[in-house]
Length: 379
Length: 243
Image (tube, rainbow over all chains, first blue to last red; front, side):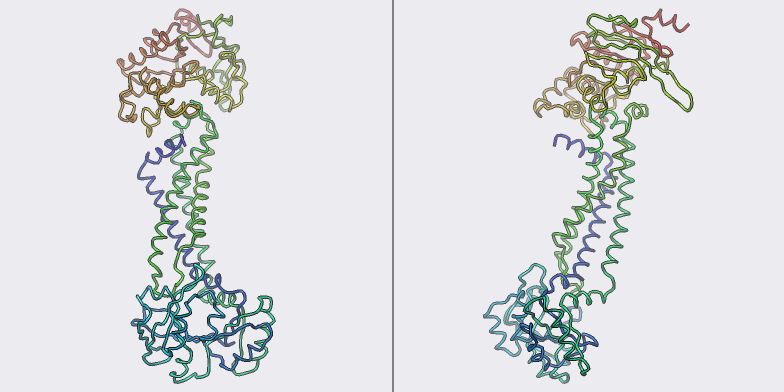
């Protein structure tokens, strides 16, 4: 600790240079944070997907429906514990910018198949008793200031007409990263009012007795409906979420590429700054050695300075990113999981410190190896 | 009294025997110091003079453990430093040597206090003990009232006084001064020389000083002349050697 003032004092030697270097780190770490957030937004569905659930969709496309009659047939397959179904509604609330996912759900089995979504029994009962009842996620309710009892008008896009719903409950997630932006209403309400597609559902979600049954059950389901007008494609919830994310392109590769370029550039900028800083101070470092500071101390001293710059810039950038994400999804629904998770912050700090070490190691080594007499001759 | 003939002094603090220093530049060997003998007693103030390139600074660097000789040995207060490893030499330097450079070489981002405190950071002294030592050292050079000033806020003479305080704060065995007045006006130079004389007379510090300034050399108890790597005692001897 007694050497800390020595390291800190050097940060104020060239204030503009230090500010710019810290600024470079902060900008890079802010960008890194945003990339982590975007990656998380695309992969979150994969991360939270249940291991004991299968999704059954139409083999042609997820937007093609499946018959309601499949429900009972699937339920009879050994290994299937429960089944529920959903139908995409795709309505507009007030303005198209106010996007959020709306699903017509199967009220009987929703809570059995998706236990991670938590709602009180009283609210659920009220929902069941009201044909126009709806349940909103806590996130979407907070976004629009909804509360239980509110009447919500939604303009049908796929199913024309003005639809009205009564908020009967607000669901919360049992995990930090559960999606709280969904809006549920009863399938029966949709099926009665819609002009076409009666008796059809969007997809089924099957809950298994054991994840070990997944391959067998999926194969049995698809075989059962093969060569029918509505052939099915069954895969684990994780696989479906992963396929869905891939529709947007190889996000992972894109993010790693951009992140890699950013960090390489940051490494060059910081490395150059540290090299200049040390070169300018060789005489002073030589004096430190002359008065008895060891080569190892000089190495750690220069590295410490580089690390301190990296740590300040890194923490600053990540803090700014965290503050930015606290405002919620800036795309209004396209990226519902818009937050910077703790592991992302730790990874960012780790990367910043790694760049700090890499940027400082060469100048620090040259300072360590410098001969005092040679350096003093240049003073 | 200082001796250069290789015969031992009774109170010898520094003893040099057969010291050679050779540099290789390109394919050529340059003999900077050749078979040098020197004995300096405790508390002596010795000045080294000589033309540029005569080996004065090289001798100082060798005495301070900043460089290693090509041959010969240096013994300081019973410790032979010529065969010490790099780390041992660094530790030894911290305990035994106080350096005063021509260009002061203070750290510009540290205050006078912090600059003087630097050698004490290597000791186990507590913060309050360090403060006490620093205040004493700055008091010796009459700069206690400037301890919170940065080097840029001090004159050249004051900077050199801070450098002297830094050199003496850990109470080293001897001081090595490389042209301590070389960058100063006459008055400031006199102030510095007065301090060095006081350190020698009142505190019995052993001081070895390289200088080009005859007036500075006059303050020393003995002046040795280096020419072409050979050490000779006294002005007359030097003249003889030069001729």
